[in-house]
Structure formats: C-alpha cells, structure tokens
Length: 304
Figure 1 (spheres, rainbow, N blue to C red):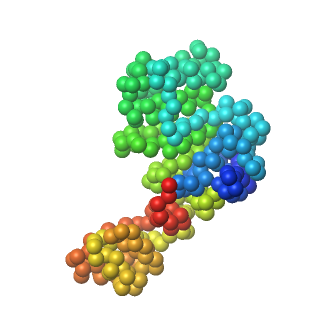
Figure 2: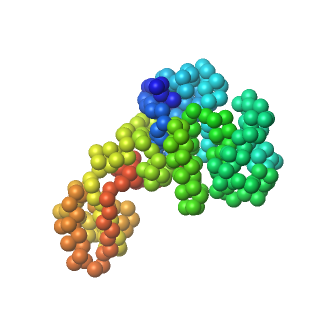
Figure 3: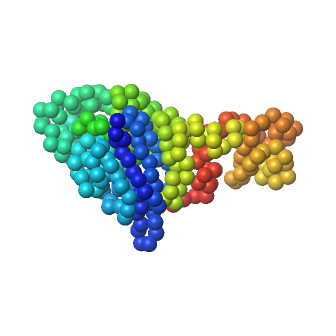
C-alpha cells in the first residue's frame, strides 16, 4: 500500500534561517506516527508544508497519493485536521458546526446529518446536538473538534497537540478515541509535547531539533538505543554538591536541573546503597522513558 504521507528532503527557510533542513519520513497505513520536538524545532512548519498551507523551498511531498503543493486542495479533501487551537464557530451549536464544516468537502446535507449522531457519540457528546458552544467545557470543545475532523471520513488524521490544556480525564478519553480510530485502520500524524502520550499512541516517531530529524523509531527502540536502562533522580538542596563528588562513581551520565540530579545507569544497586546512607537526600528509581530520550537529544534548556 502507498504511504498516506511521504516527505523527501523537505526544506523551508524564513528570513535566511532554515527552519526545516532536509527532513525525510513516511507514514505506514494504519499507524500513528509522532513528530516530536521542542518549540522552534520545525514541527508546525513541517505540518503546514505537508498540508499545502506553506510552500516549501525544496523537497517532495506526497499526501494521500497527491503531490503537494500542486494538488494540495484535492489532497486535503481526504484528510482530517485537529489544529493546535480550537477554531469552532461560536455562532453555531454542535451539530451546526459539523454540518457547515462538512459542506467544505462537498458533502450533501443529508449525508452530513446522517453522520452527526455517530460523530457526537464517538466524541462523548451524545445529546449535545443543539448545545451552544459557550455551554461546552474545554474538553468538550476539543472532542467536538476531533469529531469535526472526521466528518469527511478521512484517510489520514493530522493532530497538532490535540490534548494540550485538557485535564487528565479528557486526555484519557481522547486517547481512547484515537486508539479506536487506529483499530479501524485510520492513519494518524501526531505532534505532542506529552511524552507519555507519544509512548501510548505512536507506533513510530521522529524527534526533531533545529529543523532536522535527530532520531526515528518506535518508542521502545528509541529508549533501548538512545538511553541507559535506569534513571535515579536525587532530590534535595545537597544533591548538586553530592553529585559533583559522588555521582560519577556510579552513573554513566549525570545531569543536574535545579535541586534535582538525574543519574543514568544500567545497574542502580551500588548508587542506591550509597544513597541509603544519606538521609539528607531523597531519591526515585525508575526505568528510562521517552522523555529521557527527548531531553538527551534536545537538551534541557528552555525554548521560546
């Protein structure tokens, strides 16, 4: 089967600065592919190029078997998009938002109206057809935006940070719905700043930094290949001083952030024994995760 999205050697610059610097990736049908990176890494520009909303400086993009940007409009007819910020129409109720949006895809009103009950049920909004937008919580609006992205029964769903700002209950509900879509054979391109979200949903992912892909693979492959197996986090005012003289004896790699010291190692037992004799320090021993990989590859400094 053809890749729902294929990107080859994509380049884009603004004001002499190369924002996307020759990246290549392809999605397999029926998978969730994640695009991760700190602010300014080039993720949003990449998405905009893929959807034909921004013209690249170089490279080839094929979206649902259509060349982009040459036939971007035709390609977008088979794509659903959940933008980073909700752009629902506040003048319409829930059903009207779906009806008007469906018309953009050339769907007849009867077809759209027949789909609305199932879409609202899928989004956990059954019975909210006539509810005005102002009566919905943030989580409800986000779920309505997801339902709206499905009104044209797309082959590919593009999600730009779909759970930002949501409470844990709403996040878990959206995760459940996305898993249902994957089980039904949909393909998803996801950007997120939540590493646990990427671990739960993504079959494969790429980590971007400074416009380049610095790592690609499944979450499990990246954790196994890029990071030590265990992490011991050491807390307390005395932690940085302790780390300067002791941590290197036990850990392969040590990072300090404020009063927290991160010790990366494969055998934590000797370090934990040492910490057992230091009541002034607190510690947490855990397996390495995708966030550890992300921070190793992109750094801990704040990005704006």
